[in-house]
Amino acid sequence: MRSTGRVRAPRGGDVAAPRVPFVDLKRQAADLRVELDAAFRSVVERAAYTLGPELARFEESFAAFCGCDHAVGVSSGTDALKLALLAAGVRPGDDVIVPVNTFIATAEAVSHIGATPVFVDCLEGSGLMDPAAVGAAVTPRTSAVVPVHLYGQTVDMDAVAETASRHGLAVVEDACQAHGARYKGRPAGSLGATAAFSFYPGKNLGALGDGGAVTTRDRAAAEAVRLYRDHGQEDKYTHRVVGYCDRLHNLQAAFLLVKLPRLTAWNEARRAAAADYDSALAGRQGVTVTERSDGSEGVHHLYVVMVDGRDEVRERVGERGVDSGIHYPVPLHLQPAYAELGYGRGDFPAAERRAERILSLPMFPEITGEQRARVVTALAEATA
Ligand SMILES: Cc1ncc(COP(=O)(O)O)c(C=O)c1O
Image (cartoon, rainbow, N blue to C red; front, side):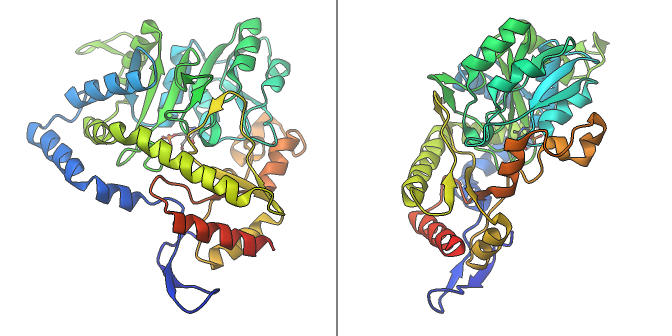
């Protein structure tokens, strides 16, 4: 299903057609090859591998992009979440509210610092965390809530902020899929106490390996993340806290500096592709497109539809030369890794129903109209 080789088109004649990939990272690297090579050579010539000038420049540019005063580059989105939680004041023994419909890293980061995830359901139409569920999940130990801007759409942050301020919770955004998304005109990453971004290669802004960043408008929080990411080091060999080795590599920052100026155009291309899918799929029997969240100007990290009989549909779409994904097939409360929390099937029905029906279609900035037409045709035939 994930192969990207050439297949013989099984429908519509005998022309060999290339598969439509789910994402096309080779294409983006080819477009940027000269600049990426130059960035690589420049870093290697100076042997500037850790905490170098490219990292400082990237942090400044990314902070500005997110409408924040501070961005701190770290080793991954997971570590960004961990350090964003610590910097927002979460401590071992605390409870942290996390949606079940997300990548497991959202909950893992909570567990990594000795806190406990407390799960809440999603809205069935959009897949985003249900803000109305947050208040009921608050315990005496709850110190934070993590809204996840899933698929590149922002959560209803006014509703989350209202509940958070009523219960004295820190809001830590998981913006790992939402570089450039806006909520009521304000950028993702600037909407809570702290926020986490991932630069995993397939993200809207992807490094050539792992990477992440914490953004914040709070100087003290930014300083805490800087301290934690570098062994708690204040001055050379003076360690104020027990920290981590969680720095963003300077080489990755150099690559990200090549890509960041293109991000707005790439997000526009994703929006155009999503609008095209929307109109091609509107009213189509058996296919439900993801509901748009009020106030959200999304960046379509993923384009997700719901279909009945998803596994068969996915197989048939694959047979027609179209790759696809499922984000995510098992909600967090049903993951073996979190069995000890004692949740069971039926606890979060909206997420459970979505997990049976969701299918992510190919989505990347360079996707062509011809590729999208093939996706739509394959989906129509597979759901007929
Ligand atoms: C919603 C969400 N949170 C967290 C992460 C973790 O990011 P990373 O893979 O860079 O650790 C990801 C990406 O994989 C993600 O999609």
